Length: 377
Ligand SMILES: [Zn+2]
Image 1 (cartoon, rainbow, N blue to C red):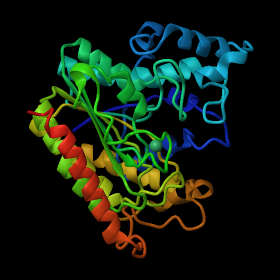
Image 2 (tube, rainbow, N blue to C red):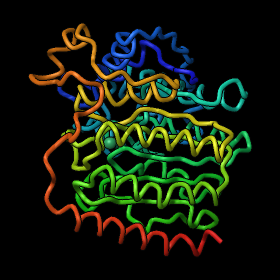
Image 3 (cartoon, helix red, strand yellow):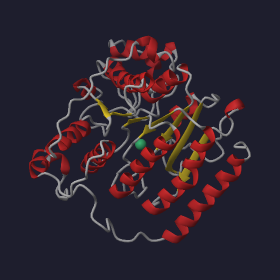
Image 4 (cartoon, protein in one colour):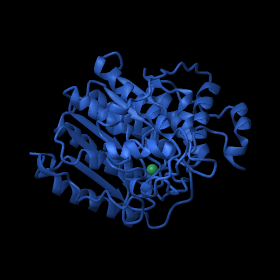
């Protein structure tokens, strides 16, 4: 069983109808879970306070968000990553972002209080937000605020990022902190935003060896992805011995996602979720906090995150999508949404170059292990 955190105010984190990070994705997930016959009574967490935001962000940056939110003209906004195509300014954005941070923080508090072991924040996952600027659709770093609260509680925190993109914001915020391990699997930064997440980024000072990056080749498929995961993540957790696992569960590594070129199927995502629960059971007494993240193909995101919810709740995964749900979301689902919760098998025709791609991924994992193991003694 898992606790679900969500509130209608999350829909206010909205950069406009043309922007891909649309809150409609959350509405589709909630509707799909309920259409499958499950009653939802999510926990409505309070918004994070300004002081809580300041546990990871600079005051000057937060003041800039607030000023732009009030409608003040600030020519220097772009230096803070705001008023850009990725992060347009909109009225109410400060509070909208604080609602999302508050959800992740509340989830961390439920774990710290011992009232829950599995928590899903249905929203957020703003892993690109930096100490002093917005980036990549992310204004305040909800994950980092939750991690910081766990650190203040005396815990060692393992952060795992399965988004298509490198979790650069979280990595940077804890790059020198030996109480936080960050592990990110992503499409290599040689081809994809934000251009970081290379194997040489290992952390600094006492945290050397605590920043772990698995950059994967474009068109990496499920089997090769899971092989890399299994070669790195369990050993990292075993060595670090964390008290809690925090996960950014973006869905944009799916093969249909328009933002990049990893090629996971829904079956691979379910395999990842099972691994995450097993790792939490083995290393953190079951304690795990998950947020959402990227994911830009609406019909896939709805299916993947519904599978996440059902897996966390130990519920069976039904085969078919409810007809009423398909009809309600017809405009968002596109012309051929499919009728099953999982992808068909096989999900797509064989991609050329598989052997060479898998060999390159094995090579990068071997080089990463060589670098890390000297610190993991
Ligand atoms: Zn992403």
